Image 1 (cartoon, rainbow, N blue to C red):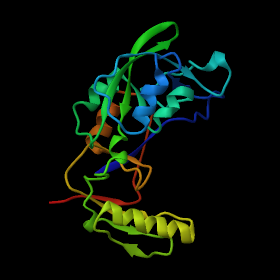
Image 2: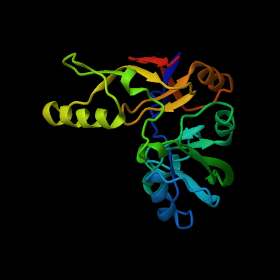
Image 3: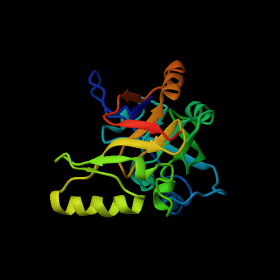
Image 4: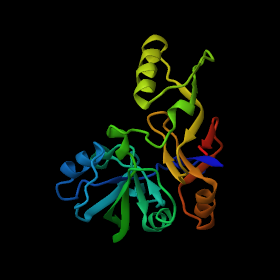
Length: 228
């Protein structure tokens, strides 16, 4: 069973804004972050020293909450939809199966006058490559539109072509009804088919058992199957 995993960003009981990771003080940050944002995996990257939390709220509230997952802001936002994660979460993820391609970059986070180890979790690399969504069996995967038309495709390229055609005509995207995976993974980013990040029940249970902070889980409105 799979669940949708999102980053916790809103806090009804707190009149404060969650801080995001800004890497403006990292040496040559724009060069490195641009490469990561374009999907390149940099195997010889240095330790990125250092990030700090920043939000659109008052500066004195930027560090009011530290989560095991944050998004990026300002210079950090060049890296797109990748996540900024704690050492605990990174260690946990390494015990599970993550869909390709991904990479972890060690960083230092200055938080309340102390530098702690945090990681850039780059999981969007495969989106930029020719073998996009290679872990999905497209001939078995089913899509639909708001008009309840159903489609299957032979490849990611066929899906992309039809999706662009439908968007140009109706200003909507194809949505999945059933996604068939070629193999099992515990952590799967489904962009660009959907913006969802989905995780296995085992990974969800492990995150909850460790009481990691900053995650919201919900049920999917489409099916996930593993090809036998």
